[in-house]
Image 1 (cartoon, rainbow, N blue to C red):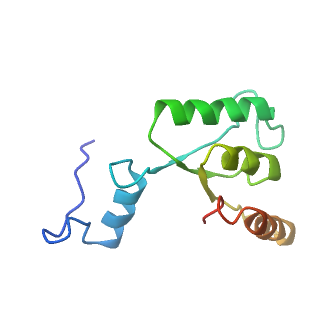
Image 2 (image 1 turned 90 degrees about the horizontal axis):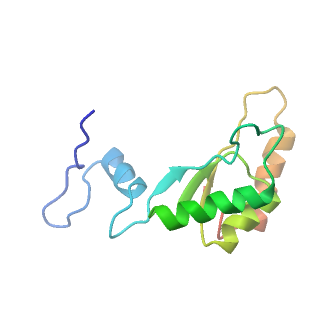
Length: 123
């Protein structure tokens, strides 16, 4: 697979399409820390059997030490995980799964987390 740089305007050196802009902001560079999917659900853990917070913190620390990514996309939008992200200066794009029937509790939890972490949970 070949990856090419998004088209830019010569006057501003900014991407010229919405998709190009999005891809530019998602990729770490001198102007943006970029974003990456982050799932602490490593084997043998799952969303129904989450890993210990110490492991989540260790994975976040490794991400910070080994990459330039500072925004993470994740499904685990719960209090402790967001506190770990806040302590490390990470921003979170929270993914909300609305595929199961009545999603009232899921939506209420997402709203609650957004209110508790307005500087961390950015989308």
